[in-house]
Image 1 (cartoon, helix red, strand yellow):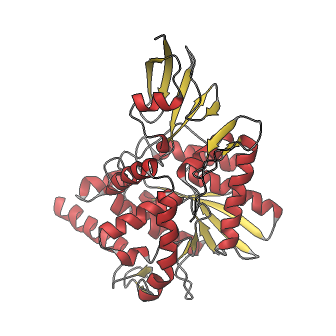
Image 2: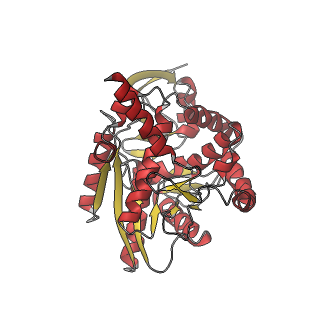
Length: 71
Length: 314
């Protein structure tokens, strides 16, 4: 199956990573792969929020933003 | 609460959130939904009177800035609701300085007076310095001093009420923590409006985000430009609260609506708890005069321990 590559920034860890997924993958698949509970984050692409069922595209730049209060 | 699953989109615009009940809302409809929810909470629990000199406790984080933004909106519609912001600088290097800068920027941009009070000025030590002296849980000592200072300064500033950014997740965690620690008396001091007292020693605190989930607050903060870079207090990561939070988020993922159910069932029992524990915190601390459950308050007890440890070290 064809693969897509996604650039991901995880704000809670202040970390950039690259993720490889099947080309019909969604935000939900990305969060599963990264073992992130969807209840604890919001996800943006090009400064717009996207939902868990949104399909991802090759070379997408995704931000995963924590909803957890800092203290 | 009955949750009816409905996976429909609100309109043809791209959705920014899927609510617990399943509905997907676009940016404009979510903004309207969220603001109405907060204003409805204020009415439902009678959080504000017709005239208020209202304080808003802010940290610079998304929750408190969201509350400040919404109460500022209310204040502009109703000049009898006057607002001022209060922030506490605990002295946590590399953390609080960043969030206070965000808080100051927001207040400057919106013409809101920000009063900052620090542990260093009030107690002679920063939190970081206290934690080098005493072997205590950071969140316990920090919470005691923060509540003490917020109450004291609210009275000094003659505030009629103090609004905080506590959301549904915070409340849910507190309820579960008190259950797990068999500290049900502390739960009697939870709820959307707390600290009622006739003697002027308590500042009444209100929680306009009481029924808003953390994800909803973050979504609102994101689409309204209130979300700063993620900052987490270095002391919070391994706290008991953090573990309860993770457990609740795990349950919420498997069983959507868990947090609403916990808070709603708690609200059913709250009047009984308040009646049972109404005598607690009724006396004045013999040292500082602040409200206390015992002869001396927790803040004075910590200060005494700090003083003794410093003398012992010298």
